[in-house]
Amino acid sequence: MVGGGLCPSGPPPPPPPSYMITGIVIRGREYPHKVPTANVELDEPFEPGIFTAMVKLAYTKGDQVLGQAIVWSIPGSSVLEVYIGQYEGDLYGEELTLFQFRQLERPVLRLLVDQAIRSVPLAG
Image (cartoon, rainbow, N blue to C red; front, side):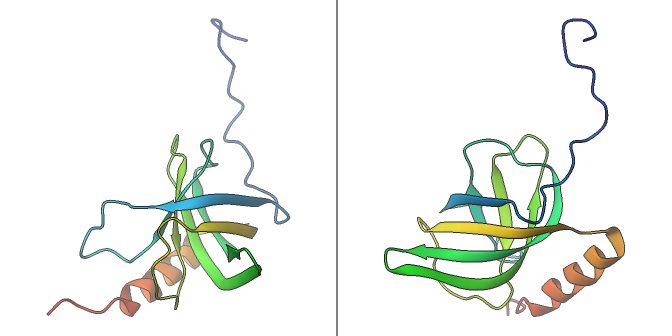
């Protein structure tokens, strides 16, 4: 301890692939020219970074896997931004579970961001 606080030893490690987290989809700022994402509210802040993860939607009669998603978190935030590729629909108020996390490296990230941007229809 230094000066009464913890001495940081670098950023915490990313979540292991077996890690699972569940949260409720809340409304975000709904920017009109942004890739549509599900804002998943968590009980506590998540490790900052950009990841891929599998996403499933919890139903009372079983789970529906929605597919692979790009997930990002900013430092200190308890809300994850989750981009679920080809999914179209209203997820507000739904419970999502994210699992099979994998942290993305910068070259892979650039490719995925470019693909996501190209998938958004232009407003006309």
